Length: 209
Image (tube, rainbow, N blue to C red; front, side, top):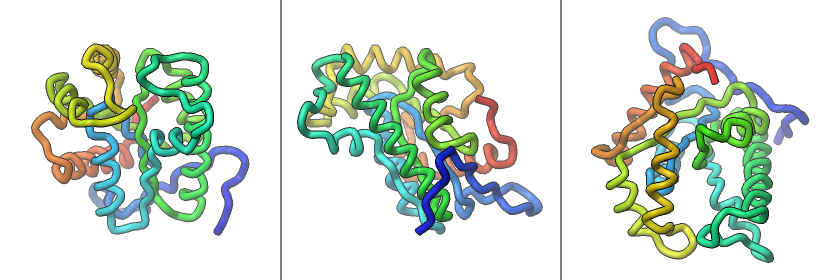
């Protein structure tokens, strides 16, 4: 297996061909952004499992939860320990993504990236993965997010107040120029199909971010 260089690698571009690029067969690095309860993990897993080319789902939450001693409980609020934990997890995920891309394997990452923290959010992921990363926002309505969060258990379940606050901050992505999917009325397969359509357009005309 080929290891990536020290710096970020570009995601290979689609081969030149007439018509719209086929996002289902192109090697891609995708960042799926959204609040807790948006369905990021479910959509990312489904999308990765159903592509016609090797694709890895890299879950920030799963990587973050590798840490056991001194693990920061999300329900205890944001603090220096939480910040350090997420920072380490993002760097680890970024290295994994570069490694997959260097071996011709697509990847999709999911994270609750806030538009009002560009240096930590999109800027950080761009540094960790590379300029070929394609960000897409998954943002259903607040009532849907609250319903999905209520079905969660353990540390991943947040209070309604916290969910509403996060969802409100995510609304800042409107007008940012990034593609946004409102999956309030879409099931997972339908959302994945819309994601493919958006990625095909992004391959042809990469968003400025």
